[in-house]
Image (cartoon, rainbow, N blue to C red; front, top):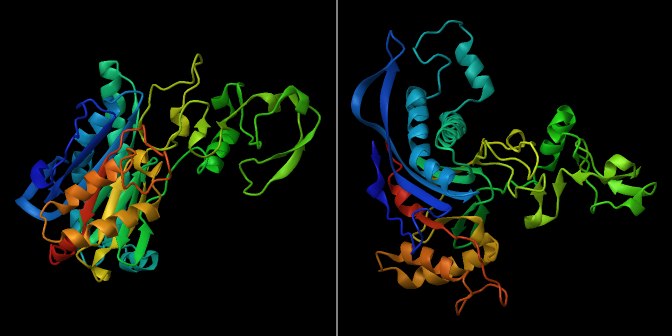
Length: 392
C-alpha cells in the first residue's frame, strides 16, 4: 500500500545518515472493519481511497529519530485513516461506525458539533504523530540510540491538502497574487505560555534549578531588590516584580528568536523522539515539555481556481533562516513561468531554492547570508492535485 516511487527524492550528495530526512509517496487506504476477535478484516483489499503524502524530518542529537520517522510515520497514518475510512466517505461522519443509532439524537449531536470528514483526517494525523513518537521511543531505547526530530507532513486527500507541523520547518502556498502560510513554527518562544504553565502545575520538573518566569534578560546579582519587568504563564502582557534570589536561577526559556532554548538545551518545543534527552549534567528531562502533537492546517484545493504555477513549498528551517516567505515566492514566480515546457521544472525549482541559501550568484538573500544548516525542500504543484480531487 506504500508506493515510494511516486516522487523522486534527491539526496544532493548528503549521507543517507543525514539529520534531514524526507519521505513521499501514494497513500492507499483500504476499507476494513473489526471482526469478532477485534482483528482487522479487509473488506476490499484493493485501494478504496487514495491520497498523496510528503514529509520532512529535521533531526537533532543524531539522525536516528528522523530516519525512523521517515520510515514509519506514513504507516501509522495509513492505519489511522483506515480505522476511520467509513466515516471519511459518509455524507457526514456518523456517531457510530457500525451503523447503529443508539440514541435518536446522535445524528443531531454530530451536526451541532459541526463534525466533518476533514476533522477525521485531522484526528488521524494527530494520532499518527503520537503513535510514531511512541514507536521512536521504543526503538531508540532498544537500540541504545538517542535523538529527536521535527516533522512537517502534507497529505492530499479528497480534494484537500492537510499540512501537519510539529517543529520549526515551514510550508507556504505560493500563487501568482498570494502567499499563504500553511504552518507556524513551534519554538520555546512561540509556546512560552504552554511551557511556563506546565512548570507552574508541575514545579518538580524544574528540579529547583530553573525559574519558570520570563525576564527581558538573564538577571544578575546586582538586580537583587530591583523592580524588573517579567511575565508568568497567565500573562501575554508584562508587569514588574522585585527580584528575589530564586529569580537568579537559569530561565526555563532563555534567548530570543532562533537563539531561544528550552532549559538551555533545545531550540524546538514540538517534534518526535527526545525521550532520553536531559539537560546537560543533570537528570532533568526535556520530554515532558515537548509535544509530539502537530498543528494541522487545511487547504481546500477544490475552492481555489488553480493555475499551473500554484505550488506549495515545504522546507526545513535551513531555508527559512535565510529566505523570507516573500523571497521564496519571488524565486518561484521568476522561475516557473519561463520553464513551462520543462517536465522537471518543479524539481529544478527545489534545487534552485537550496542553491539560493548557499550564497550563490543571483541569490535574493541579504549580502553574505548563507545557511550552514541542512536544507531540504519539496515543491508540490497543486494543479495536478486539483485534477485528481474528483471522486474517491
